[in-house]
Amino acid sequence: MSDLRGPMQDPFHLLYAENHHWLQSWLRRRLDCQADAADLAHDTFLRTLKSNQLGQINEPRAFLCLIAKRVLYTFWRRNELERSYLDAIASLPGNVAPSEEEFALLREALEAIDAMLDGLPIRVRHAFLLNRLEGLTHQQIAAQLNTSAASVERWIKRALTQCYIVQMGLGR
Amino acid sequence: MTDRARSGLPATVKVAIDWMVFLDSGNAQPCDKSAFEVWLGADPSHRQAWESLNYALSSPFHQVAQAERESPGTAGAATRALRSSGISLERRRLLRNGSVMMLLLGLSGSLMFARRKPLDSLLSDLSTGTGERKHITLSDGSQLTLNARTTVDIDFSAQLRRVRLKQGELSIQVAADKTRPLEVWTDHGSARALGTRFSMRQMDQYSVVGVQQHSVHVRTLCGQQAVITDGHALRFSDTALFPLPDDSSRLDAWVNGLLEVEDESLGAVIEALRPYRYGLIRVSSAAARLRVFGVFALDHSDQALQSLAQVLPINVSRFGPVTLIDVQ
Image (tube, rainbow over all chains, first blue to last red; front, side, top):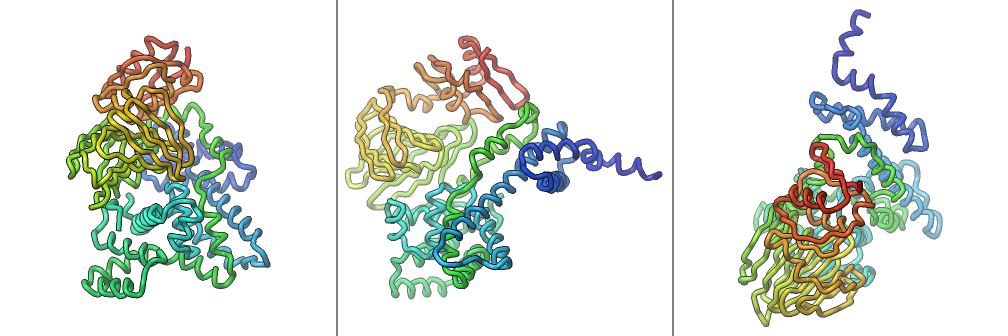
């Protein structure tokens, strides 16, 4: 019991103790599920801890809000990506339901690709995916997207360059 | 191979990317593949660049390819899932719906979103930051001016002079060259000129072109075309053309550091000031609808806001780097 004062002086413990409940209900108002809200609240604190800005936070709740929004965004994006993939699989003819294990691996791959393509315009993404994942030629893509082969080439080059930069960690 | 972007990358990597795009284009012949082998063997740095590129792309894409082999249709489903980005509008709204506290936040975090230079600028030939304008003489003698927060690539060949406006706004006095037209490209289409002066601006959903001298030929990505003569302006998306009122002479007033508006919405005026300000400006929708007349100095945007507050029924409040504008 004599240690009680110790952790409470630590800025992170203080931040957690004072704001955890508030943050969780803030998240709960935006999510349908209590368990998700609890998970994401923990994610948020973890990221705050990793941000190395603990000493400089003037408005703790505003700061947490900012981080929580990013956590929420990632959570929702992941969620929607998974759903649209499963929808696409479901609309395929025949029975191609992936096993649990296959799906787990694939989901990771999809998230990695999604992160690499972040910020690219939709047509650039689409052209690149048709080429890279489905092996379509520039001509075929141009016909499908109603554009010129020269644009397709430019878009694919742009996407490829971004992938390289993101993967090699040159973007920051 | 076009596109001289990507100036931040090692030259060998750029060549490796060109090779990869070409080899996977469906146009490569057996002799091209031998030429590629020759390039690969010509210098150890070539192989190294090729391998680093393959490494960068390997794991997630291989995973999908493997799944495709096991259950055909997977790759198509992956394309459909990945081709759109972001989250639903409804969720986006939930995120935007921040408390007032968000606005009072004096932290670099939220400003980074507004001020962050896009990844693109690392790869581009020319760019300007917040509050910065640049005049450049291109190799053919054309005079290019970039407005603040603008990124362009220059790609000149023997047949064509291509300027790619990736974001922001430019004005160009094109040097005459009958054999080599000059084209400015945005995400939505292109404007083609022989010798003339015009300005172009890229927004999220559309681009705007205004002609100050002679004429330019606009073509949207989907092929709609129009010829615009001096004094006229046009807004276009990738699928449609929308003529604008004849006030294009003022569209490039920013070149001289001025913003000239005549019966423009306050929202549009603030949009034009944005690239000149660090921090955030929020305008309520009621305030954004107010009509504005006047000439403002872009380099003194604080003064511009002050004079707006004097003539319009608005309140301008500041919280550190955040400026809020609302009706009184």
